Length: 105
Image (tube, rainbow, N blue to C red):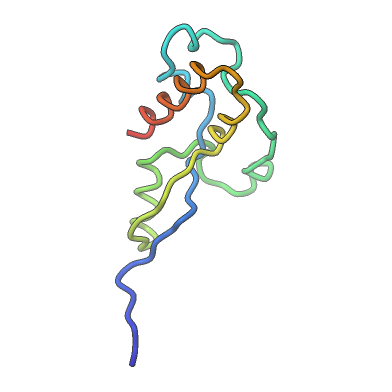
């Protein structure tokens, strides 16, 4: 018996999001903050630029990559947005999550 895969599924895709993307969607007064991310881990996900590709990668960029690689679907997670857990202000955390959702649609 042989099994033929109809498509691949990626269960751990990450958009590469940054302050510029979030700031566009943050509601006032949070959009006026000097820094909107809190507690970034400072991990260099581009390995000093050696990985190539765009520094920021949104949902449409992921769709293009999936098509090129023959991947049927993916579950996307934030990258910079993972710092939402460091936000100590409940109203700001909600606004931040709303900004991420709006950025992704």
